[in-house]
Length: 238
Image (cartoon, rainbow, N blue to C red; front, side):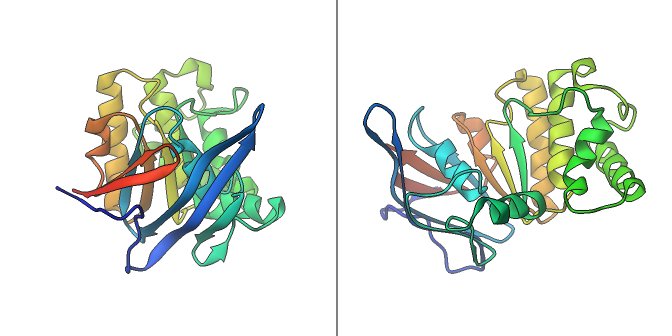
């Protein structure tokens, strides 16, 4: 393993994501700078983990890349489109079609069944009901939940809910999968299974950006970007 000296994580390979000198500040009883000039590229098909202590800016970076938030300055590009400077309608469209999210808290709709949760992103893409269900069933079977299609989230274990979340993230065939502490709310054995699934997602050709505080989880990736105090302090190629 080697550590780069530059405070960036850029590449000459074809990037699906390009973050250029991004700063993000919040007004919280004063100005808080969450990111202070971060630059990072994600090559198409790459697997990148972001590590750092609490408050380092790693989740802020993930939210900016996913179009959940906008930078104070700098550019965030997804497939060449500046989503950081786009309006909410454009960012919502990008989130629905280009980005799959896997959150620590699962973020499943409690009144929808597993198959309905997985099909939900496809509603916003205009898929008809039959095609949505077929696609959702296919992805739930791929994560080993073909026998839990009509179960509500509260009828599933934590690990099963996280697998539903992964199936939902993959249903729209996104250019990018973002995972924020995906093993944080499951036990270690279930967490290993969740990571095996994400490894398979990467092997299938998807680009993954993973935020974690766990070194063992980060080492599943091809590269670890270390962030502290809103800045990239080093990059490890694994």
